[in-house]
Length: 247
Image (cartoon, rainbow, N blue to C red; front, side, top):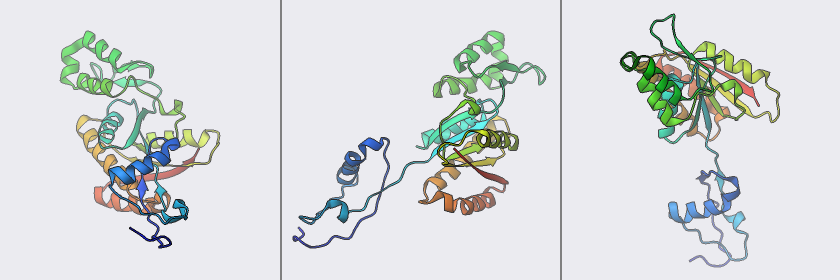
């Protein structure tokens, strides 16, 4: 037990929380219960002067492909299971899925649910869409969220927006740059090319998640992101595009 008047060295720690209004309560629980840390405070001295708490907000990620079906949803699934805050989108005008031939895709609006697409393709040709993996993909997608979402229609704010093609990178950057600026919060747009097939989508999801976790681990992303991207580009031996915009 410390004697009255004895000073305690300030302690810095990281606390993650989901509701700003509950910071005080959650800090107490996290320090006393989750981490089993106990502080002996000097009598008559404000506790805030004795213990320094640095609260770090988790990063908010978005991943964008063309139709919010294969690459973005594989990454959405992979990253969410690893605890990252993630939403997925498409950037195209319509949702396109493989059809009976390359020149006959199945086309839906972004308001169409994955469930509807799944049942619609079963009715059209269950054998074909089972063999080419589309039904398996839609079954996964409908377990994650109701329907595809278009990035240009979303007004949520993200720290990082991942894209999987240079064309999509350009679309996302153009959309963000053309929006009315309200808060001037910084957003990083990062592109790694990922081919649109199941195997490459799985590899792409791993890369985006790995890169996202590296970004989540640093204290000052805006100052450290260039170094992170340079090192990661060397690791995966793929070019990485990076731009910034503001909300």
